[in-house]
Image (cartoon, rainbow over all chains, first blue to last red; front, side, top):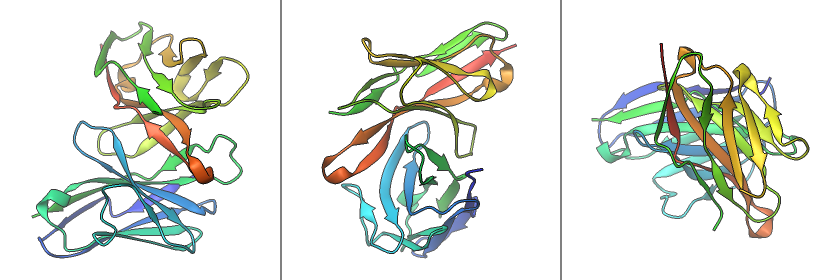
Length: 117
Length: 116
């Protein structure tokens, strides 16, 4: 159980275009999902917390207009990188918290590697 | 400040030997601690967690971790390493903030290399 699916796994786009990444919880309902960014050989940086039915909570320094997050249902959150530029190239990983787990451990998607040309 | 430290960038071990990946933490209140593993170009896989109870926690793939409150450590261990264990390992702690908000804080990661 606790499977999180992320799509696409790889995407290449031209500078100035927008890219949408989807994160789905397959066998549970996730009221809260998290979006992380990972640079090469570095740890995960939390970008934002996605809450079903309400606005996302962004971490300090993350541009909310640049990284649009929509959590429209209990099983789907999307991250849209708007007007992408080469510096947005990175590995983006989503995760979800399984309800009723005392510790609140997260389960992660497989990640999406974005390359902006 | 609430934080997680993984002091080793890389750990090298021969196949069949025991391995230890170190983690120390700083958090207010009782710690909820986790270990995750990441293979290249993949997301993170949950290995194990400590909430309360026995200090030795057993997890997936033969891994275990020992919680030590006095040393604020949660080192990951395995009695006999496999080449397939080679990956990037992250320690994490659940940190609480005002307003009931909490999130996982991750360490910098330790790359484990198991040599045949």
